[in-house]
Image 1 (cartoon, rainbow, N blue to C red):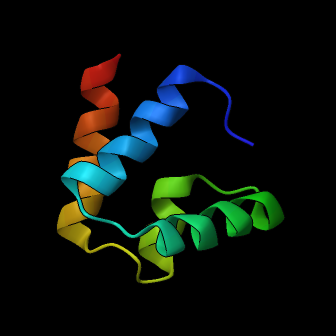
Image 2: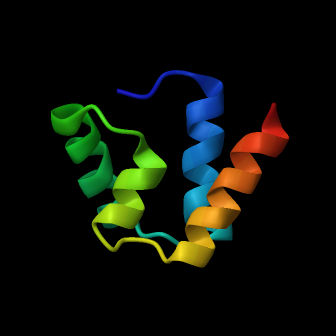
Length: 65
């Protein structure tokens, strides 16, 4: 369950900037609970985001810190 403000910001970024569907995000979140993997990599691994989108995700994560 996401409770951290930065997690909500990240999900908003995925939906609003990258136009990743809520269904894709839900799939990746479920997989992250089972596989204990990082959400960005799971999104890419399961073909839910492109390599370009993955790069934008990493850029966003780096710049928010």
